[in-house]
Every structure is written in structure tokens, then in C-alpha cells.
Length: 455
Image (cartoon, rainbow, N blue to C red; front, side, top):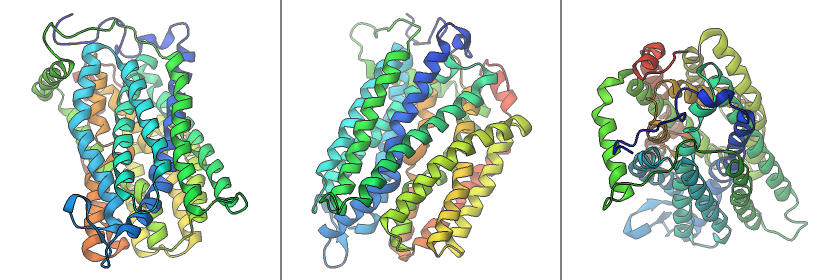
């Protein structure tokens, strides 16, 4: 195989496999990885770990409310946002190289499974987070979130194989919708555990640790479905004699950046996505902490609100798929960003009660799945054939609960102002900037530049 590592055969050629015998079974298996990993997003990132790790950090704090990881002075309330931010710094460094390695070696499935099971194991390790062991919690989350992001890179890279351009919006939306159901179902079970913790002889902390570990077990169990159904269509390759996989990956990545000027629309979209998705993911990751610390809502309220989001978002994904068919996917995403801007303004100025928190979460749920599913399908049209994992690795730098600029800005605003409301309002810059840049993206031109069929 040439050293460029381009994928040959049928892989990555605009969904040529979408009509193959067994393609529907393979798509169903692909959907199930979203079902598997969404438990990590909901039960760990969104609901339980932020408040619980903050409680653990406060137990370890000095008289002034600071912890000192490796000698660095950090407000106990800002520790979790900083850990989220640091985990994404690692992803920004490592994921593009891993994506290049996957494209070079044609081992997307093997790498997906390796990182999925490693992340699940780290997540199950959160069961041992207790007392003042905030560093243990931070370290396990760093490992789990890095593995989560890496696995999503290889998962997304299968989308062009499984769907023609005309099917991308629908298939991507279905993946997100199935994920919301899976994450929501486990969250419902964890809510039931919380409601009966006392009767079962468990403390709130015990219930939180069991819920965190259950997400890892769920992730591992349902990863067996895509393991059995997904398939590589090009034989795995090895690097030249004497050259390591990572060396080949760095060289492949270097070639990608040297060719960047050929795909200006792709990179403009990626920049827009990176900005607005930073805002989305920060809201998702820190919503429970905002509700607990600013609104003083109990864990049951936070959990039921996030649970509601999962099931409303299932319908929101399909709603925005229909909107995309009517006005185009790019315009549908832009409409969602207008709503996201209104969400942070409302949270800053008007959000006071549990009822208002539920209402705002319902609004978020409607636009959440659509903005993410349509972004993924749009991007799949703009990436060159044979370089799917590498480009989705760059995309993943701004994906879900892994954005580093947003949590960093949120944490800094909180530490210097002491106000969660100012911290949440600071995120408006991501939505406005992303909306403006997305307005300049020409999807049809970008698809042609990448050698793909336009929408």
C-alpha cells in the first residue's frame, strides 16, 4: 500500500455500501454504539460526576475553599470544569493523530472497540471515588473522556460507508435519537436507585458511585453489538519496515494540513462548528452544577430534568430532520443556534425556579439533537474520500462534552466573579460567532471540492 494511507475499495466512497446486502443490519449496529456510549454523556458528564466530584473536592479543600492539585491553587467549585477542559486539551493533541493512524491502517473498528472498552473500564473505576480522593476522580475522568472522544472519531468515520448523501441527515439523526433513548433509559434506572437509596441502605454518595459505575458497564455491554455487526472493507495495513504507527500517523496528518487550502469550505465549517459546539457542550456538561450551586436544586430535580431532555431530544432529532428537508440542513442548524443564544440569555436573566429549569431544559432538548445530528451529516459531505477518520478526529475536538475553551471560560468567569450567572452568559460568544461563520459556508461548493456529491 502507498505510504499515503488512503482508503481504497468501497470504504469512504460516498455511501456505496449503503445498498449492500446486510447494510441495514450494519446501520442498526452502528446506532447501538450511540446507545452504548450515551450513558457516559448522561449519567457521568451531565448529571452525576460534576456535583459529586465537586462535593469530594470541597471535602478536600482548605479553609478558603481551594484544593491544590500538584501545587496549583484551584477553587473547589471550578475543579470539575477545569478537568473537563484539560481532558479536551489531551484530545486536541492526540485525536487527529489517532484518526490519521486509523485511516492509514484501515483499523477503524479495532480502534473503536479498544478505546470503547478502555473508557468503559475507567468509568467503572469511578465507583471507588469517595472521601477526599478528588484527584482519583479527576484522573479517571480524564482517561474515560479521552477514550470516549477517540471512540466517537472511529464511530463517526463509518457514516459515509453506511449512508448515501441523501440518507446522511436521516441516518445521523437516527443515531443521535437512539443514543438519547439509551442514555435516558439508564438515567431513569439511576433515578429509581436514587429514589430508593435510603430503603436499600445506601447513602446519596453510594447511589452516585453506583450510577457512575453503571454507565461504564452499560457502555461495555452494548458495545458488543457494533463489535458483531460493523465491518472493515479494506484489509488492514502495516507501516513501512522500521516505522511506527504513530510516525505514519503524524506524516499522514502533516499531508492533511498541507492540503488544507484545497478545502476552504470544509475548514470554515469546522471552525464554525468548533465555536458553537463549545457552547453547546459546556451547557450540557455544567447544567447540573449550575442547577445545584446557583438554583440550589436537589439531585432528584436535576436528574429528572436531564432525563426529560433525553426523551424530548429523541423527538427533537426527528423534528430537525424534517426541518432540514424543508429548508436545508445548514439553515436548520443556524435556526438552532438562535435558540441556543436565547437559552443562555434566559438562564442569566430570568431562570429562578425548578419549574423554569424544567421549561428551559425542554427547549434545549428540542434543539440539542438536531443541531448535533445535522452538523455531523453536513460535515460528512465536506471531507475527502479515504480520510474520514482523520477528518472526524479534527471534528471531535469540538464534540459533545469535550470542549476545552467553553469550560475554561466558564471556570474562569466563576472563579473571578463568583457568579454562575455571569459564567453561563459568557458562553453567548460561542453561539453568536459560530452562527456568523456558518452563514458563510457553501455546502454544495465544499462537497464538490472534497470530491463528493452535494446535498
